Length: 200
Image (cartoon, rainbow, N blue to C red; front, side):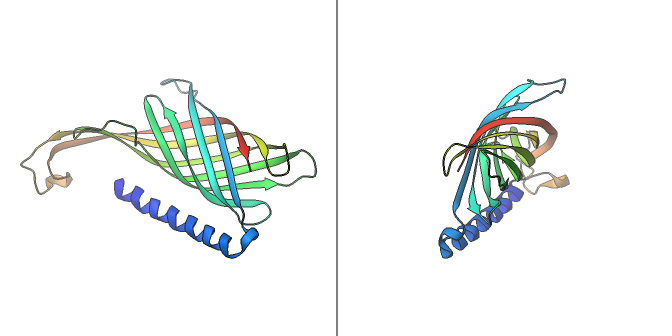
């Protein structure tokens, strides 16, 4: 999982650097775009709280008149676990001559449990996430718009518990070195997202 997350981080960083270099090369052709939102993740499952907190910010560049590409990060609450999303993101706007326009977006990436207090025998790791959304943009001035969006967020989280065995230095039976046993419980959280934000 850690290797997967590291590899994905390099992919995100490379794509973002390419976008910003291209933006610098073409001046105003690829201007900076930010979309910051706060809201709730709604759960209708039998376990866990039904409503939890979400905060995220998308930072990118405008690829053309209606599409922006970049990366998304923030913080999401799942039961007693705080997950930091790290995703490639896209934001689109169906332009309108009125005050209102249609917003749509997609984030695909990984989550990481940086805030969790891990030990050698118990730790939490984030996993794959996907978050499509659609909403409205409300023009407030020339460059700034308010947003109201709804979406669906799917986040995978794994909890690991292990029993140490210092004599297992070679990683026998497919276990990491130093472990007698290792158990993984994988949880998939499906949430409806409702967010208010600022888009500029």
